[in-house]
Length: 171
Length: 169
Image 1 (cartoon, rainbow over the protein chains, first blue to last red):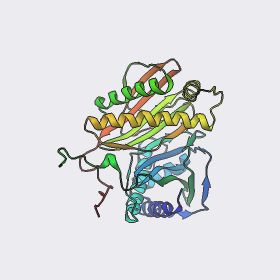
Image 2 (image 1 turned 180 degrees about the vertical axis):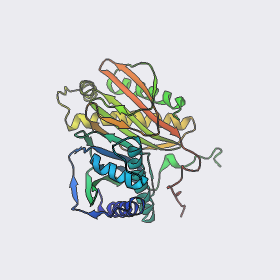
Image 3 (image 1 turned 30 degrees about the horizontal axis):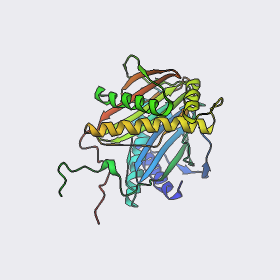
Image 4 (image 1 turned 120 degrees about the vertical axis):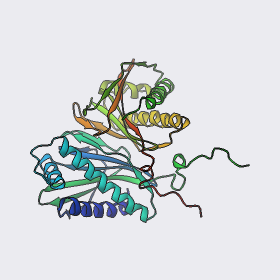
């Protein structure tokens, strides 16, 4: 896991939460973890494929999730309903998308997958041989913990399956 | 909208990989299309696809099935779902999905897969949001593996949304 992937995500999270939800986040202490993650109430999980590959997840409790979704939607949500779930997944999507644009500016092209939402406290998520860089972000409405299990792809620059195969290769 | 044409590459890949790696033949159960969140079994291997087909693929099974599969794969008896067993079952998901994407590319849909993520937790809710899932149970001697496909054809303009083509020097 490389720390150089961290800054794009922290910047993206700060900018997106500020713009979309008017929430100011403060970065907490970094840590590197190898053991599986035991989930909080809500986890948004998104994969990156390309020059940088791996998985990013955003964990938070239900109260924080509802508060952030309410701020994005501009209406007070009472519970973790479909709208709140969709809002938080989209937030993860926008943050990760913005981070991947920032990563591409530093020379690492990657494509992000659609988000997956885990609703379960106490489940474990393992990224196997990918160690995770863990960054807590704190705010008035609660904490979001970003987990980055990323590494540079071995096939950097030769992302074969994304290249179009010419229909009639010239001799 | 999930497309059924993406199903067969996965079922075929699973049959071939399980035959080759763990000498198991599979029997396909009844298909269903689900829109609500998936309620997970003990072990879920999750991989994402990006490219002309995008979305999430999940393989769910009980711990007993996972242990039996890994025991067959590695040729030694596993009684505990330890790191090696987790790695084995994730790799199985990786190989099946990788093989399925080769089949998809032969059908004209290029895609790349993410590294696998392993989720453990019985009856947790996993939502793929606006992606509906094709669910197909595969019955084996080791137990049941449930394949969940939340895939769709990428809209033509969104595919390269944050992908900048490699420039030739």
